[in-house]
Image 1 (tube, rainbow, N blue to C red):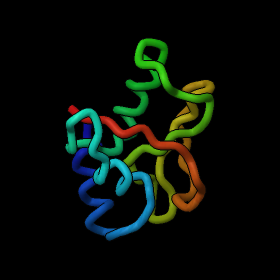
Image 2: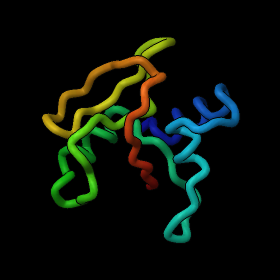
Image 3: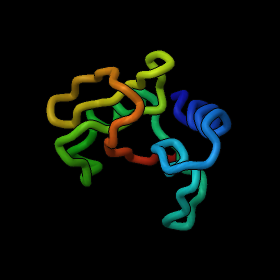
Length: 98
């Protein structure tokens, strides 16, 4: 449940740019502007409910949970595994709100 706080920390640290946390922080859709990049645990909850939520593809999605200085946690929406991988590759993100 730390995704909202993580997103603020990432955006404050990284500044302007086109990266997952910033995309979610800047998102305004469906009349809401309080979107954020989910944490590792929140992303796993999304995976557990992916059939009900819909719209996911069989690929990796970023979480806002940092693994270390150069890696972050992501989740494979093919098999549900959570892995750390380098922060620089392009992967999908799914913005959420409370």
